[in-house]
Length: 435
Image 1 (cartoon, rainbow, N blue to C red):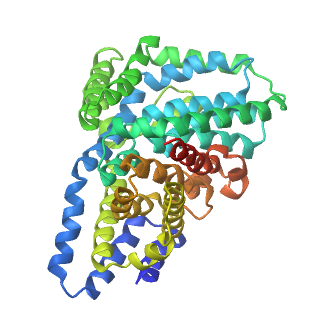
Image 2 (cartoon, one colour):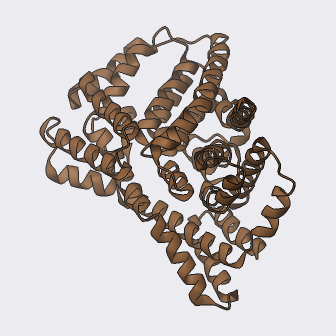
Image 3 (cartoon, one colour):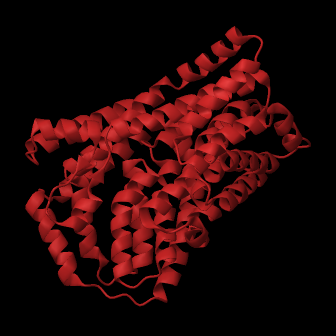
């Protein structure tokens, strides 16, 4: 039965259609084989109910991406970023810039397809090798899936493992800082060997375009800062996002002087800049509630499918073999990573790699006296983060469509993505020995 599920999902990648249809086909086939359909249906519905707040978060994420742009937050970031480009190590700068912005925006692909694409274009103009440059941008962009309080995948992870963001942050920030520091140093070393030239005239023209179309002020950075502060203060993520959406909307309407009609269209369909500068317009184009409907459907279908697989105990024999003779905390974390990576790899998406181990392994972590936040951290540091390294994965295929570069080319330089699983296992091992 598992093979049928894999084939249904993999066919979506081959046919270039939404993963939702693969999940739906797997659900229909699996349901047809279940005798006690009422119990199975109840199990699936309970799973959906458990993550109901996540669905609002996903839709708000799409709306907020538009608000980041219409309110001037992203334009302001780009404006001041151009000021800092001259004379800096561009490879390290691209990694740090995308890492910070993705944490605020809450989406790796959203960051990569906007600011990341801008940095990619500028870096290529400086003469940097495209695969190395894209590797740095991917490393920074996908930090959002690991730590952003407004990321759909981060919230899916903490929902499934039954913890809150504050607990997760405390557990995840240590390995992330270590991984980020090592990654940044390596990019700085690689970038130091490359000669870049900055065309200040072109950058100046971009800044003039931004000034002519938006009110630029450093005070707008207070909004991203507020997201992090509220999340770490224990404020519910949904309330956090609603507060930011409301504040950003007011700034859009009354400070940036955008009409209600344009604001509404941006929130529902996505924001599209109209500055007259093709390069700037190509950057400031993303978001919207409607484009996030597909993400919502995929996540919901994945949760239903997990409920049915759990009811049928389809995955248990596989997990039992992998987890056999697990006697140490480090071994459990290592095997959790293997399971999450395996599921992400065979389903071509991170969702099942989060939902299945997150729900099934909680009892095992309790038995080994390991906190659920360690389970959440392990999943995000392994199955979640390796997705853009796999050339058949949906994420890498989207990146290929955006940039024209395959994961086979940029993956060796996406340092954070393959360093993260190693660091999280070593970190757990060291902490376990100290305890």
